[in-house]
Length: 319
Image 1 (cartoon, rainbow, N blue to C red):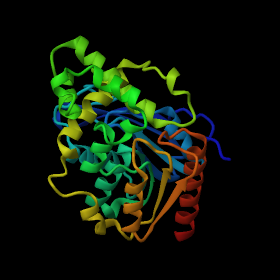
Image 2 (tube, rainbow, N blue to C red; image 1 turned 90 degrees about the horizontal axis):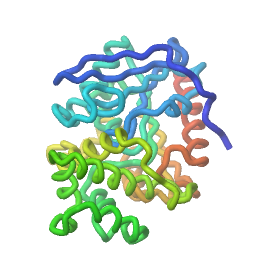
Image 3 (cartoon, rainbow, N blue to C red; image 1 turned 180 degrees about the vertical axis):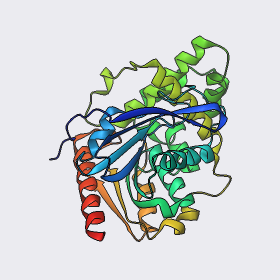
């Protein structure tokens, strides 16, 4: 069973100004002459982690992480101003151009898979390959699963009740709308409570390796960013403008991809990953038999690190 690569420090960190008066926190690590890879974090709004560097062999990869606009260490944060899918795609291109990278491996988890696919569809000629963990396509089926009582709530009814408890009774039938109203209100106490409840609901769904009763929200900033920005995107249907990712998949169908998905993922449904793989001839779906959604469960770490090694070998031999 593989473990994460050893801890490394960034070679450089910087802020990159982008449209709408946003500044992106960007960091690079590993081998500057290695295979360029950009890792796209989840959420939306979750921010990158130092452990995301550790999926990649630092001798083989030039590793780029960044906090998507409005989240993490990017400025301002949290913020939903000038924050939509087109801006995020443009931000990734701005990073690529700033670092003078011709093509790169695009990797991500959860919402990061959504963004990776959207970016690849718009800039297919810039993508060497994909590694995608925990597929989320931003469909109505997925919102219903996460936020309505007929989905994940059936497996975690007491935690779903906690999730609903911060909402006024008149909004509990439409939690997405109710949370968005709370999170964009001027009531700071209500915003804090809603942020923590939103974040905790997903946290409780994410892992089958941890004791759910002991999970706590220990970073109010991350919770606020995730809740506000996720709510913003989901209430706007991820800004797809009526055309889903599967409808545009033909653009990237010839690009190789490794898809990793836990069989017991309660945040992102396995059948969504299966649908994607069925329509993508060059994609290989790996179903992890004893994994949930978290990117840092033992089987997921093992699969992701092996995938990065596999892709490195493939790209090196191809060249």
